[in-house]
Each structure stands twice: as C-alpha cells, then as structure tokens.
Image (cartoon, rainbow, N blue to C red; front, side):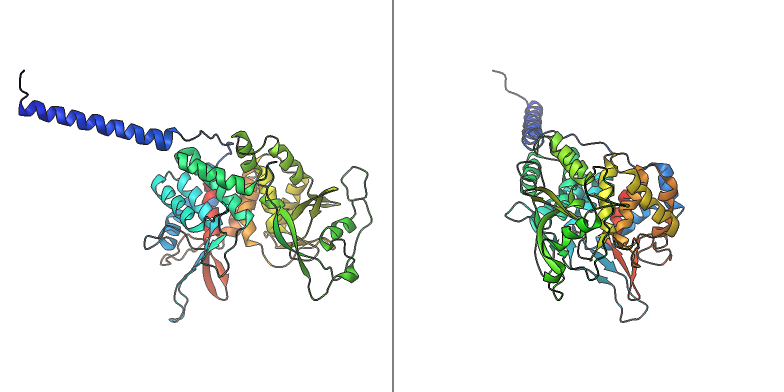
Amino acid sequence: MKRLTGKQLTILGVSLAVILLVGGGYLFYAKVFGNAAKIKLYETAVPGYEWKDIAADNNIVSDYLWSRTKKLMLSDGSILIPSSYMIEGRLVTQEAEVSEIYDLSDQALLLKCYVRSGDRLAAASLKNEVIKQFKTYTGLYLSTVGADIDYSVISDNVEWLDAFLEYYSLYGTADDYEEIKQLTDALFDDNGELIPESLTIAKYVDTMYVSTDDHGDGDGEDSSLEQIYGAFVGEESQEQVDRDDPETEVIGVKISDIDLKLIYNLEQNGLIAGGSYDKALATVKDSVCGGGIPYYAYAYQNTDSGINYIYSGTENAAISMTETIKTMKNLAEMNELDAASYNELRNLIMNTGFIYMYYYITTGNYSENIAYDAYVDAMQIAFLKGDADLYGTICNRIGMRVATKSTSSALYMVFREEDGRYVFYASDNLGVRLAVG
C-alpha cells in the first residue's frame, strides 16, 4: 500500500475538517433554525420617501433621530433602553439624569427599530436580555424593571409579543417559537380572547348630567348617555358611592389592548383559536360611544348578559384620548377605522393643532392638558389613511419639540419640557422613528 505524502495528508486533514465543519454547521442550523415554525405576518405599508420628506420639513429626520437616540440612551454598552433621559440643565448643579426604570413597551419599540434597520445582532441581544430580565414564571413579562413595584400589565405584554413576532418572522429560532407560544398562552384564553385584568376606573360622577335621547346606534334600543354612566358607576346608585373613594377596581380588558393585527397574525398562524379576529373586531367596533360621540370605550367586561362596556378610565365622565386614539390606530391598521371617528380626530388636530388628554362626555369639551403619548399613534393613523395634510400637521407639532441646538447631545431628538428641564422619552423617539420609517 502506497504511503501518503505529507502534502496529501495535509489536504486530507483539511478536507475532513471542512466536512466536519460544514456538517456540524448544518446540524446546528437544522436544530436551531430548521425546526422553527414558519410564520407569515399581515403586510402593512411603511412610509416612503414622500412621507419622510414631510417629516424632514418639520425638523424630524428619522435616521439622525435614530442614531442620536442610540448614542444618548444606549451608552456604556447598555442593551436595555431606559424610559427617559434628562439632559443637563442651565445650572451647574443640574446634571444629566438617566432613568433607572426600564419599560417593556420601550424594549418592544427598540426591538422593532432594530429589526426594521436590519440589525440582527442587536435585536437578538435585546430579545435575550428582555427574556432574562422581564419574564416571570407565569409566562407573562414584567411591565417594568427598576420600579418599586413589579407587576405584569397586559398592554405591555401585547406590545412585546407583537414586536417578538416581527423579530421571529425574520430571525427566529425554534426556542424563540416556544417563547412566543408560552407568552401567547399566558395572554389569551382558549377562545382567543385576551385574559382580563384588574383595572382602576372612576366610579363617582360629581354632577351627572345625562341625555335621554337615542344613543345613535341605529338598532332602535335606548342607548342613552345614562347607560354609559351606568357602565362606570356600576350597579350602585350615585348616593351609594363613597365620595371619598372615587375609584374602584374592576376585572376587564382595555379596548386599546385588542391589537387587531396581532390577533389576526396569531390566528392565521395557528397560535390562537379560529374566529378570534372576527370576534375581536366586532368587540372593538361595537365599543364606539355613539350618540354624537365617535370615540371608543376604555374597557369591556364579559357578563352573563353579554358585553358590558366601560367608557371612562380614571377620569370621571371622560374619554381618554390616548386610549381611544390607540384603538383607532389598531382599527386603521386593518382598514377598519370608522369614518366618523377619523373625521372627529382629524378636525380636532387640523383646527387646533393639539391632541388633548380627555374628551368630556357631558359637555363635549376637551381638557386643557396635552396627550403627548397620543401623537405617534395619530401620526400612524394619518399615514395609514394616506392623509398627507394631517400627517404634516402632526409632524409640525412634534417638530416643535425636536432639539435643534447644534451643540446639544440630544440634537434631532424629541423632548418634553418638564419643570424647566428637557426630558427625552424612549417612547417618543422610538415611536417617531417607526412612524417616519
């Protein structure tokens, strides 16, 4: 038998090493990625250059905003993004302050930003860190890390699951699929409905003016404003309610938590029961107040006699504009937003330039305080409706809160002024980044 030369042995060794490497790599890929279930998501439009130009004309430059947000709020190798960053003040003693609170909803926005910018490594690192820091034994995730009280909130978990699905559709592994299944099972019951949670709502109306006119739902039934009040006063009469304790706890589901696109995606991919989307859509659309009030209820409860809608949250006789606009965004994503609701919101913004915190049912007036949290959702609604004028008006209002000082560490970022200091919230900046594209 002919002995192999040194050169031939080297070639053989290298060949075997390559075979083992390729084979091992294939087995790793097959185990980690090959066994991962395929998920197809509902395709929604993303803003193109014409929309970015509208934003840029109003001081919102998406790429610069994204770059500066990462630099300012993800410094020192941080993986999680803090809820806010306050830059140094005019006085020497007013140093910069980074929040020690990390919100799950902010991590969801950050994950979407990474996925849409194609940063797979950062997205995977963030996903793993959130699982490590936020996940509980129940399958749900904590709403915050770093707060005095640890608790789970359905809305934050819904937002994280939505972001996780987006991540999984591009980069997901078999282990990620199991994480998604666990969270889905923790969030939804066997009928595909969100599990109810304890909600704090107003139970006392200081002065209860009600209308006995038909509520305008067209079914011939008496749907007066008195019924709306009954929904949050409950079965107790006004005299029975303790004036010193104006809030109560109820078990229900917030209407704004019913993320229709998410529910559609979960149903289409076999993760929740069939028919879940149609049922959820009906629940949301039926929650509109009516009676000349085209905004949406705060929450609902399943009762023996059917669905009971709760129209006010923690503010007496008032519709939360932040909550109702989030509901409107959920409907607009599926092209299901009622024209009357959209026109009411459009007229408010186009005529005043502002989104207010509350709409008062009894008077038809708005509060004076501004609902800053609602602007990004309104911006997305305008885009989804193809309304460049409304989009531009909202961008103009947000653009007034963009840092423009060239020497600022937060140049191009969106701020809020609080007690004479400038605070940059992760939700504002990441949300605008996603809304502009």
